[in-house]
Length: 160
Image 1 (cartoon, rainbow, N blue to C red):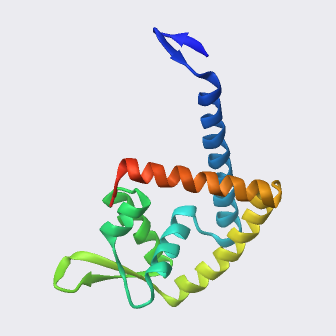
Image 2 (image 1 turned 180 degrees about the vertical axis):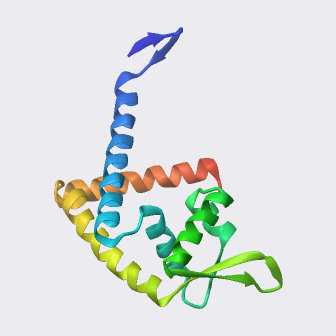
C-alpha cells in the first residue's frame, strides 16, 4: 500500500489487475495475428462471422445489433461489413418492413472461411492459452473469470 493524493492505493491489487489485462491483450494480439496470417481475415471479421453463425442460417442479424455486440460505432460496423461483403463473406439485405435497416447474413464463402478460422483459432488457443497451464490452473482461471464476468454484467446491466 502507498499513499497518493491522500488516498491509500493497494499496489498489489492494481498490479494484479494490470497483469490480467496485459495477458488478455497479448493473447488477443497473438490470436489476431494468426487469423490474419493464416486465414487472411482480421479478428473483428472473425467475430462477425462467429456472431452470424451463432444466430443461425435463417436469422440474419441487424447491422445495429452486430455493432452493439462488438462495441463498434455504426460507421465502423458499416466499413467492416463493406470489406466483408467485398470478400463475399456476407451479404446485406434490407430488413423486412424497414428498408432503412440493414440485415447481414453469412454466405457459403463466409461459412467456409469461418470453419477455416475456427480451426486456426483453436490451434492458436491450444498453443498459447491451454498449453502453458495445467488443466487445473485453466479450470480455476476460467471459473474465476466467469465469476468476474457475472458480477460485472450485474453491475453494468444489459449494454445492448
